Image 1 (cartoon, one colour):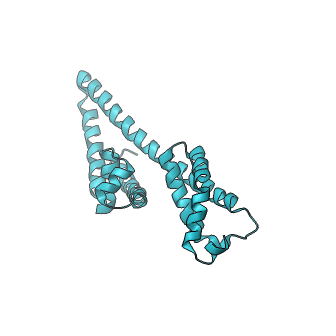
Image 2 (spheres, rainbow, N blue to C red):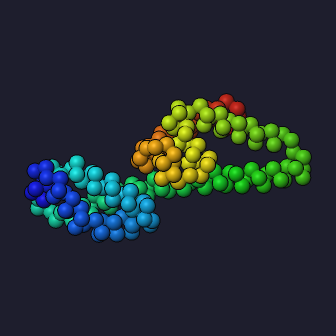
Image 3 (cartoon, one colour):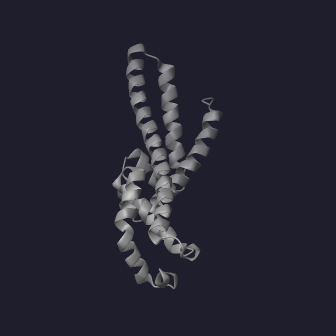
Length: 187
């Protein structure tokens, strides 16, 4: 630990080697899946590397790293819950539109069909109006259903950048859509 604190990168590598298995197990227990656990451990190790100066030396290194992993895993789980909600809403919305479309065909409810088409157009225009890096990430992830890794490969960037672009893109889209939906009388 003293070597790491003095800037020896190989000492940090050795500490990671010694504790990685346990840290991954803790993250897996908190997140429930290997991909999220790996992301949480990666973020935690990055945070630990940057925070080595705050290590007081009296704590056990393993316990200190574990506490950082627990926090990173909680954050990752929160992000995953939000992503699942968005995906669920999108899927639910698509299924709902299909059911409504089928019901409308049998009833001939033209006004309702036009309203759904208008909502779809508003959403499509909202996504299309996003700045390019956010638009591409949102389209690939939410519209085409690609995973974070697939989007990362497609955009030739790292997964954390994809996650950041998705979060910012969704925020911009939400603000834009709220305004448009209020103007259209939907909210």
